[in-house]
Length: 177
Image: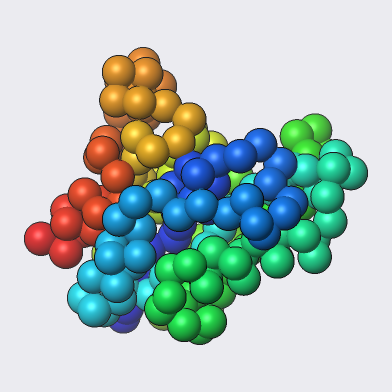
């Protein structure tokens, strides 16, 4: 069985710019490319799992979100096939949803499809819904301080069984130790 990182996009891999629709606005969080390279070199499969409620709200399109993802991949520089699979949940809060975090559906489906070992899988994100999705799927959940919350704020919001790390590099260091 394989191990994996399920990665939120905004605030985890790239700077969170509300309802990002223009690829020119994509900005990598420092250290992300190196952390992803390290994870991949240690045998982790990488999955992108992002809520994009701007689509459901009519602010931008799925094509816009995909263009931002392509720009992110270009900036990361580890190839177009970096992610084993990508889930873009387009629903706005309150809309009927299949995959919008905190739903664990994408994680659970990926674990089954790709024969992943849940004990060696992590959901990494900057919001409670990211962590809730991971915990509901029975995998590790790691919060990063590169998005919505800093360490002090996370201490008020962090689920009891989740891990807190400064950034993605620190999560990868913990997961590969």
